[in-house]
Length: 69
Image (cartoon, rainbow, N blue to C red; front, side, top):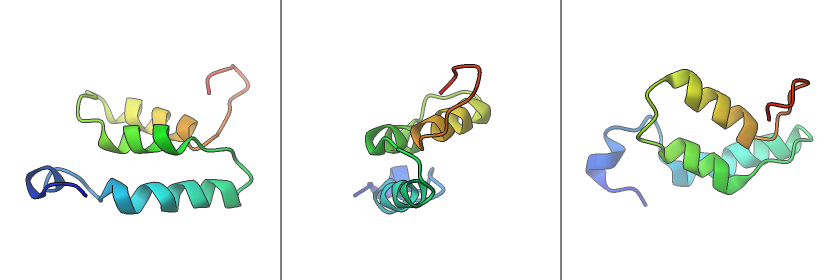
């Protein structure tokens, strides 16, 4: 469980979002990495939202033709 001060800075609780995101990705035929998904959701050091979005997409199991992911 996330403490209240930290949860005030989050959009959603990783305890709730991680399994739902992983289940969604698996249902879509992807191979998500649950630990990586959670790490992205808990990342407080990222400077740019784009970095988090890219990391989340990769953690959910999306691959890209250029080898990124």
